[in-house]
Image 1 (cartoon, rainbow, N blue to C red):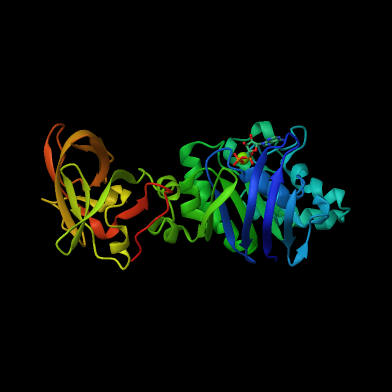
Image 2: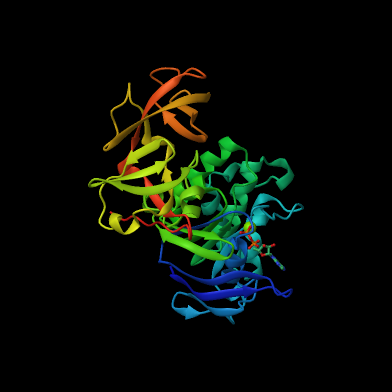
Length: 367
Ligand SMILES: Nc1ncnc2c1ncn2[C@@H]1O[C@H](COP(=O)(O)OP(=O)(O)O)[C@@H](O)[C@H]1O
Ligand SMILES: [Mg+2]
């Protein structure tokens, strides 16, 4: 059991590239932490520094209160699961799982017991005699997990372990890894570029871009209160709508305005400071309703839009709409099939709208 602390860590590669910039985060003991961000943002580099596979240029990393900057990977009491499984092709599943224990000179009976217990946990007892090439992708992934589990490490590190699986299996394995975390009761640091994976699995999410951490919080807190435009756009599918405009005041009320679009903004403490500011409004597709059929908005503001494309999903419609030159997406209830070119009166739930500075992209209006 261990807490992992990443403290002001920088990584400069040999060619001078600054891949990780002053990164700070803590994975508490037994916490499931997910580093998420677009490809190339420094996730793998960060994980490899925790594992000891990559040198730390600046800062410190500690595992269980002990600084490990100069501790060899094998002495860090961690196990890492990679995207490409890295199984030994000539060994059986049993031998693959037993390998690390043999190296550590465990007794034969202990190895046997631990491998069998771990295989049972992962429901692969019946595969122990097979070679990796006789396994499906999902089964190989389980064996890779098994190899990590037998070591009974203090911390598990996962680098995009599900990205080679097909969509259906990925969803299934997500649930299995959540269950596994509960059973093992250890700290997990998991890296993915897939925001859905991060949202559904993490206790704590660390959102990165270009080597920098932008936000750390629970998935729902990040979803509901993104600190800047990047986080707002990266988390959520379909993506949040971004509409550029200006905050204006008329009488006592404030509005978001862009040409003929005018939407009243729910009162907020610091709204007055932003009068006449150029902003980007962010509103999620589920916070826009068909006003004829749904009354869910807390603070409804109505606009008429033209329906351009409809994607029927069964339980909802993803509808691409246009108002003047502005296009945006809404998730509408499937009570009724919107027709192409139809005019739809929409309610924007302005209590759920976010406003970001056009200049620095930070969120500006706070409740
Ligand atoms: N050995 C290396 N030398 C120089 N640059 C590297 C090296 N390894 C990775 N990078 C660069 O560092 C950045 C972060 O890489 P990585 O941590 O693998 O990103 P991620 O896992 O988030 O996709 C990328 O721009 C990548 O090209
Ligand atoms: Mg990576």
